Image (cartoon, rainbow, N blue to C red; front, top):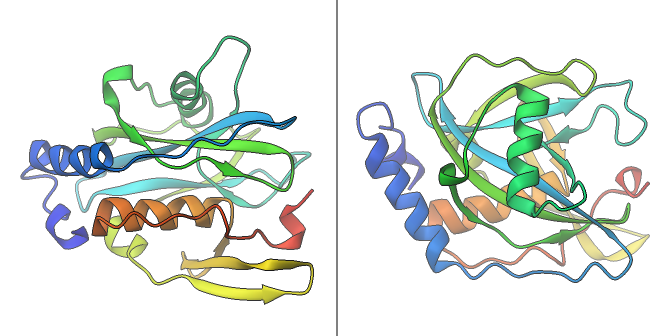
Length: 210
């Protein structure tokens, strides 16, 4: 389906409908907090005039937690927010992109992190990409990773510290790890291939546990 969606500039409405339909058929699973904190990330579909893709950030080196790691725009929920509202707010705060509730196409499974969060991935539609204004306090780099680039087979690695496999995605000439890799892998499976693949049992590398 990634190749079919590559024609976004000519058929944006068709691409949006196809993606929304795949997400509507998918029954996302929620995870109870059980003492963890709620967070949300935005999987934001956009095009800079070429193929449709999603924005992937690299966290600023000055951040106290997970500095330098690849991430999707997102963060913890503020009091009174739901995951959808938080994803929209974080996209604005991190990249300067204003999206609306009607731009939400659906959601994927919650993912529980080793650092004490339950992340809810929200899929958003932007279409033609506006000029970005990354917040330098949070974002060191932003890449638009095309759907063709995202349509990559994951790597699974065994570690002594866990009986669950660590997932790695070969992207941007490096390896992206969970939780971001788990979320993007499920996005690939559900949106690009129509497969109800679950990712709750995929592990993070030990360096991301803190």
